[in-house]
Length: 618
Image 1 (tube, one colour):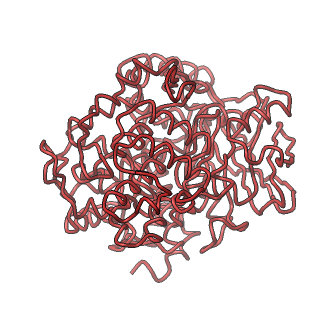
Image 2 (tube, rainbow, N blue to C red; image 1 turned 90 degrees about the vertical axis):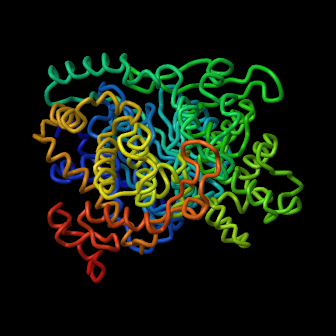
Image 3 (cartoon, rainbow, N blue to C red; image 1 turned 30 degrees about the vertical axis):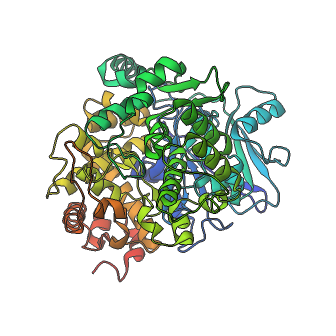
């Protein structure tokens, strides 16, 4: 078996015992790797209705067949999969850096954590040797501090570490799992799953070479993609970075501002990629095997927040900036640093702060409720202080640390209308009222509100369709985009490099063949992508989710855009959403409730899970 390590490691944190199983050729080829393999292993090792924060909820760590190789961006990723404490459905998050490559070189395709340790521990993988070590001395430390402490303890700077911060320890449902100090498996609250198991970190050192099936052809493909990454397809990431999207979306009036009260930010230029790069970016870092470089590191050299350092991306700039009405980059960078320090998902944290500001301005939350904070839109000091409170679960932060859905349920007073979430997961920086393909994609996304499950927003932004119109045909576009993205996250390749896949499916099929030696046509790979999305849907169906959960935030359905400009008056009506959902379910071959049929499961080779849909497919 080439491309794959061929081994799955099981770690029982309750007993402290470990064991290994062989990864079969059939499972490898059917589910590819990454999120596909991870969800298959999760579904086969978990029970319906499990409490996400209980010892019985498994946490799966998986890498892809390309991990550990020198293929640009493909050698470095890893994925965590579990039941999300935030959505009670599929919890899935991908990160890049160097950790995934090291895990593959240690000889593992996946690690499955079960049970709960009696005291804080970390897993130390040194090739074949797996040890559960005491983490009492690093409990309470940030992910960055944890990484340094473990490297010092082991005596090897090149050990790779994935860990949680204080937010994960305190079971914040918007907490993340960090590696390389600034890179996060960021969404769906999987840091809390680690924390619930008293698992502080995973440290790994791998020394094995990764062999590929056709080395000469593979090296030729690697060289070709190195050249592609020097070209226009990756220029944005090499230069201004993803924050370039701030101005692009602002000009189209699709930049959510002040918790979706607006779609245009008047002060966008102050937080633009140009302003960020000119004043704060000091270096741009690449992941293992990446020829592109995209991690923009910002440093504040003077003023109140002097010495602050954080990786800045569109998602963090938007969520902590325009979405909160904040136009001060130093405060935004400081808030991002605090998210890293405490181990919070910056997107969810920013959306949670904007929700608080909205509630405060509408009189739902008082100064007293907020511990004296004047949390109005644009108050940069309040932004920083609220992130600090959320990270510590201090005061109002205790309630906010579980995200906007749970917070709105506790607050009441119709605050749910201000909670920008889908399936419990906070929205991302795309105004869905005027991006109707993206609106459908967000509504049906198996992990909740997130653009990274399909990238369908690009269909709207690039003018491939009328972005203000809901019409039949969008379902097929979203389905195909989802299947492609699931393959990218199963191989695992960085989505920032997607533009270098000039012939997406055929490029990926060729890469898979050269690495693994398995014959895989573009058509077969397409089926694998569809299989992975149906697998995710089966997990959600097993956990009780159906059409009613494939919806949009109240503001998107009821509050039209008021800003003058190309999107004025845009909104997604329930009638439009129903049309789009029907079209999508039909494209998927599901019933009108969004449940896969037995015929579809048979077609995709998923018959072993047919009991999940018994009585639900009619």
